[in-house]
Image (cartoon, rainbow, N blue to C red; front, top):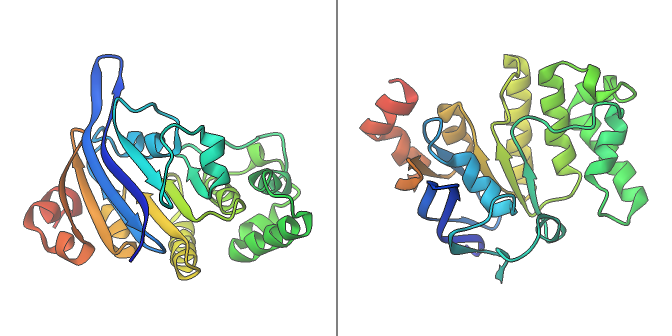
Length: 237
């Protein structure tokens, strides 16, 4: 497999507090990888560092063979690295359709953007039912689905997904899981942070366990799910 994302020895600090230390990981082309760990382990900070929202104090990040840690978040987005952050970050007064169109704002193919909006509405039927509704008037779970779909509108090579199921009903969690599998089948690589470690490990082929800003374990997900420490600490079994 070809490495699409290559993170080597990165560090991130908030003031004097180190939140990531000597963290290395990689995602191959078309691969789904998950980061698991307790709250405060550094998972979100890792995604923010990769997408350019947090400066590095050490190490470097390469994407598709190009070093990108000196690039802006927009430049990384232009290269196909798309971050769907925790907390939705929608344009609340815009409609569902307008929010989806904003996800494709860097694209020059208007017909393709329109077709992809229809595709998102097919993939997530709730969006078709709400497409003329202001995003801010939707339920929290519906907004989370919209934020996820908006990220897909950029046609990513790698999708960084942070806590996508927060606030979702069991039915929508099932929809989102199916969408992640479908996206993976389409050849899009995914780096997933998810509070439901069992779900994340089922969706991914490899995983990294983060604790206090460091990677303490890396393996294929079947091995992680059978690891006694992981089972007791993160799977509750």
